[in-house]
Length: 107
Length: 119
Image 1 (cartoon, each protein chain N blue to C red):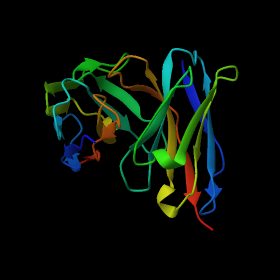
Image 2 (cartoon, rainbow over the protein chains, first blue to last red; image 1 turned 180 degrees about the horizontal axis):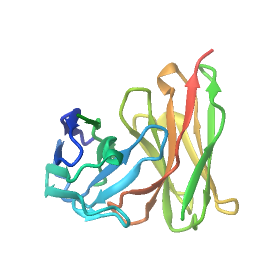
Image 3 (cartoon, helix red, strand yellow; image 1 turned 30 degrees about the vertical axis):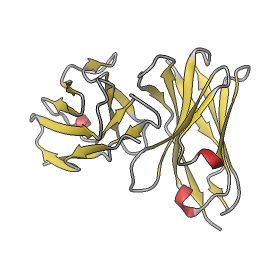
Image 4 (spheres, chains in turn orange, red; image 1 turned 180 degrees about the vertical axis):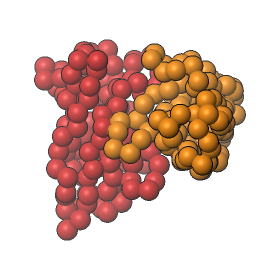
């Protein structure tokens, strides 16, 4: 299985600020890396697919980059609704696997 | 807008079989992969497996011996069965869609249903 490691596991930031979350794969996954936002009691939401493509309806404050084994998610102009848990996921090969999550909290 | 809704028991006993169903609305069940993903309390997300609308399947090896997926296209439903349950199977179970294109992400998720395994 491909192991996905996210860092940090939690993060505090201020409204209006900018954060970067990293995700590392245990082997090359080309650009098959996706990012999701999850709020308690809600369905997870796809933000970015194929490393850097923005899902329809997702604001451009979310951006992704990387290739091979190292990837990042950047969120700018943080608003209260952005405070949630973020997961990376590889869709390169089955079994599909996720990072352990990064909980973004308001400072 | 595509919507997925999980249904099934919230409490099942150890050693018994869990059966969950996902109903798809607002879109077609044909042409997509339909997955189940679970999240134990306080832990990460685990992909259980997917079924194509035609019935072909792909299971996570960690659960393969205990899991069966099925699909009923006429009802726009797909289902999950997990046998020989233990407390470790306690989790929120999500049903999820992805396009039948290699590498595509999970683009629609159900809200999830909490299943507790306890006597």
